[in-house]
Image 1 (cartoon, rainbow, N blue to C red):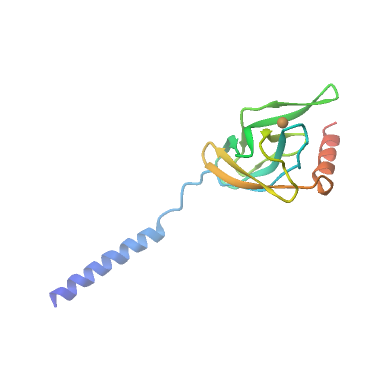
Image 2 (cartoon, rainbow, N blue to C red):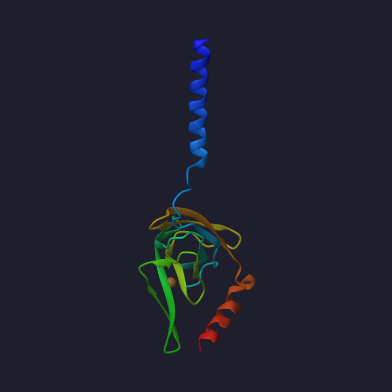
Length: 167
Ligand SMILES: [Cu+2]
């Protein structure tokens, strides 16, 4: 009889623990990053280099920052931004890409992009480029960017529309 009572106590204890676990509050709301539609252009765009575009979405309650990108396909990978200067499109390296809480950051033609410097392999349409994105808070995230045929790009029209709006 005593053993039964003890067993009952242990059982209640275990059940209580399980209930606590289930009722524990969710993780504190940090950044919640998802990488939407990463894609690249076939090479050669500019000799030996390539560009990758994507949208970084943050559905979390805290901002995050894309600090760097790594890929085996190129000797080095940089974050760049293109800007029009005296009617000439120029691009320069940027430190990072901030992703606001509950917002997004767009990497797109004519704007910010991931620059693949000195490609080791050709970027062939239909194939994919593996990239590791390093975020300040979310840590590393691996994505595969689809290499899209030049003719099949809807991005170009969007870019022109965006640029018209700014003028
Ligand atoms: Cu660039």
